[in-house]
Structure formats: C-alpha cells, structure tokens
Image (cartoon, rainbow, N blue to C red):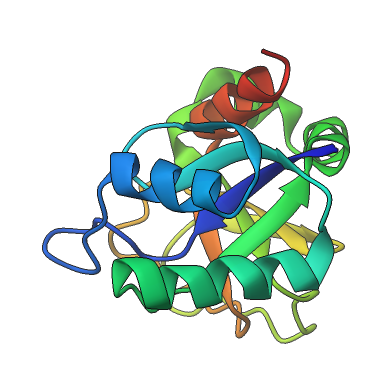
Length: 168
C-alpha cells in the first residue's frame, strides 16, 4: 500500500461544490482504502491504497460523482512525491517568511509554458514538473495569473500539514 494525498479542486468555496469531510472520508474508505483522514475543509484526503496515478484520480472522481453527487477533479500525489515537492521548493525564503501567501498549484499535467501574469500585480512563480510554486506578496484576490491547466492551489501551511499527516 502506498500513502497518497488527494486534493479536490474547487470544493467548499462559499456555496460552491459543498462536500462534508465525513462523507468524503466515508467514500474513500468504502473504496477499500486504508487509514483515511481529511485535513481542513478544503478537500484534502490522506490515505493508503494500491492503485496510484491517473487511474486512482479517475477512480476517486467517478466515486465522488456517484456517491457524493460531486463533479470535481482530484489531483493525487504519493507521500514520496509530496516530500519531493517540498524539497524542490524554489522559494524557501518566502515559504518561511509568509507561508500564507506562498502557494503550491498542483496540476493534473505539467503546465504549458504559457503561464502568464497580466496587470500590475507583483506575484511571481516557477513551474517544476506538474506543480507551480506561486508567491502572492499582495494576496491572491486580484491576481491575474493564468496557468492554463487543471489544478488546485494550497498555501504552504497546508502543504506542510499534509506532509505531516502522511507520517502519522
């Protein structure tokens, strides 16, 4: 069994795509996965399973549609992948000084070279594999960053909490 982190895209944002973490845990457990735990209310699940990669993402997405009436993408990484994400962080200073404004954007596929920032915002980023590390010194609210791929963002505090959860 491999430890995985699954990130649900765009759930529990206001009234958008509501899902209870208890229902999400039950769904993942009912799939036969072990040591299932959720973190926060933004759709983060840590669990152990044999399936991995795109096959696992599809399995979770299909189950969410059927069991939770929830149509959303799941971005899945192994615990080993997650440790590498942390180790490859190109902005360690920002991660330490302002982790709430430093974000990991985890993508289903490697983002195209066409990531663009328009407008007068001061955010900056670096794409590494299937992840984009983004610093929002002025916050995300008015950002004009366009990644042009399916993914979901977590601030660095959450990234570290998820890493800790894989070690329990």
